[in-house]
Length: 504
Image 1 (cartoon, helix red, strand yellow):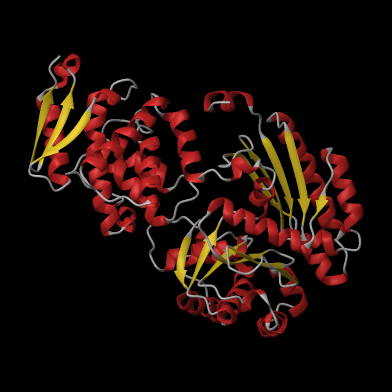
Image 2 (cartoon, rainbow, N blue to C red):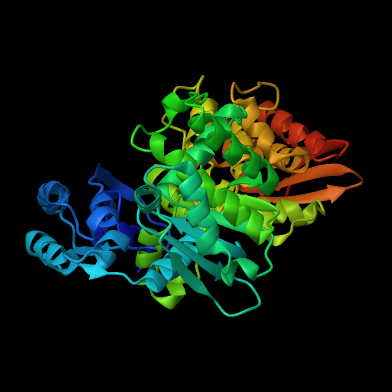
């Protein structure tokens, strides 16, 4: 089944996550390697608060949750959801009345509610991390309202999972909202962790409270790209930041940038900071990376066929974007081959990561064509910098944005988003400039349509970049193409350029 057929025949899939703090419904376009959200809604029901107090889900929270589920059921019907899944985590798992509650939910939405064990929750969190960051190796922590799950992924030892009653709502309840009590509880539970004894440079933090900590860190450090997915911070720096959060909360001081943090998470931040700080110290990590993908995405990833799981998520989502936004989807594939031929001819070194970024850029190269001519470049940058891309770090995301900035804006104009583009780094920035200049040559030849680029070839002769055109395309030889070809040659470190017309 080709991409076009998949887009029209597959129907939406929904997943409902009944957590200890919130209940969330996410509806995806279809079940694929690169999930595209169609609808995302959450409701704070705080189911874990009652469990922390007397071991039961509180009646008022149950009532609220049941109303929320009735609404979610309607939304799924309106959006013609073909397949729906629902799971519950720590609060329902630990509550004395959790089984009855799950049955009530199932009756409303018409599907069974799967109550995950702590080990299953940790496993799906690891799969979710892999789904969004397939190259990640290290230890993963998923901090919810009721529990903390730790697991390993990609390390030499067997996969390990642990679960602790250290969710932020649980911690607040047990400590009676005392930071000292929370620190004591955290230290006591984590001191014998087998997972944290595994040697790893990186810790991956999952969960709403930790995402808000990452967001606050970005604001206070003036980090230009407000994107939590794959946001990486030095572990010692993050420990110091956690200390700052704890100290300011204890002194009843207001955090700088707190207006950008979810109001439902503000009072949870210091308790999340206590757990994160302890994990980073015990694990001796070099860095912490934050993931916006977790148990939900891992749960769905687990239901994919093996061949689908092995696909590159970045290339999958970029190809889908090309299908939806490019004037010719097939032109993207021709651009991949066109750019590969240029890379080989010009003897530019390209490793596997650089290759996949180049191919991703080719899929994205025509996504802003509907925009105003003066703003296509900036619109393309925004679509990439703040788009729902996965399988790419911030430097890679900046490389893609910088490539399209050159493709649409040329080599002389500067973007208002230069700080974001600078995240690419010096080496990536140079490659993006070359690739963007190459795109400018390609699109003036092909007019964004398939069928022309395969007829064109490159050659290098004594530091001269030669563009070889067949006789039936000789009319393309004009000043505009010559100028862009010469820009490409200079950018690639060559002396000059020439257009060669093949004779029949």
